[in-house]
Image (cartoon, rainbow, N blue to C red; front, side):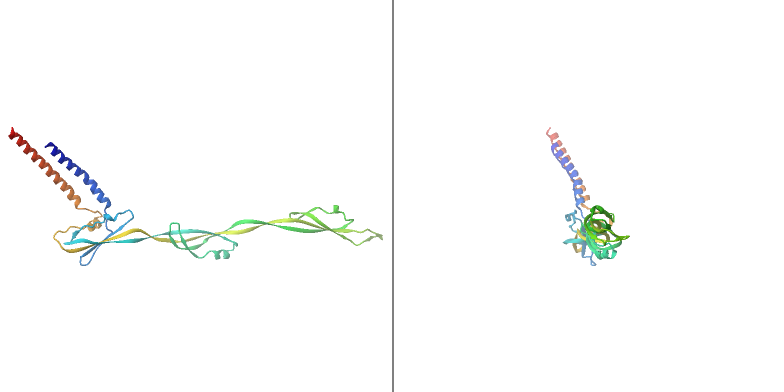
Length: 302
């Protein structure tokens, strides 16, 4: 007899322990409607659920319910992908090369508006901001050219190269003697005395000149505007219930409870604990009855 009572008590305790976990699991997976509409004649109710990627549509209630004397039954559950628009302000900096630095040439390279697509997939038309246009030298180059200069040295007594400088300075560059062209001057007399021939040396000097130049220019400018995209991040479910006539009992719908108070209440949450308590009480009463009957039988046997 003691074994029977022990088993009944254990069953009751296990039932009480499992109730909170079952209720928590049901609550965590429950889905709540974002809107509820009812037809004018009251024969159809539509519950709309917009669920994210992490929400399970299995949590959408499908059971019958009664409202205003009408019994409603689920007849269809529609599924529809919902576009979600995302937009933001975006600044795109462009960089390009130009051979010229004047603004007219630069603006020919920069259209007033441009289409852009961001790295994360947003797109839009952006407008050039003129006050952000900047032109900088992209680099320098150098070039070398040959330089030739001639010098004349007249009235020389002879064709002696010692009279001719081997190097000269010209424009800050040092030039080296490359060639001499001798010319004979006319014979002159001084006080009736004849003088010998005189010479003019035409010397050619050569060297090199190096100059730098701008290779090109780098142009940077900002384009500003709104970029956006449509992302399918939510799924819409529409539960359609149809009514089949008036009833006596009126039970508030889950949609009215969730939409009106923000709390989704299941009547089963109240009924289950009451049922368990009743079952436990009945079990304990039965055990006590059997115990007393067994004790009476033992007394009679004595």
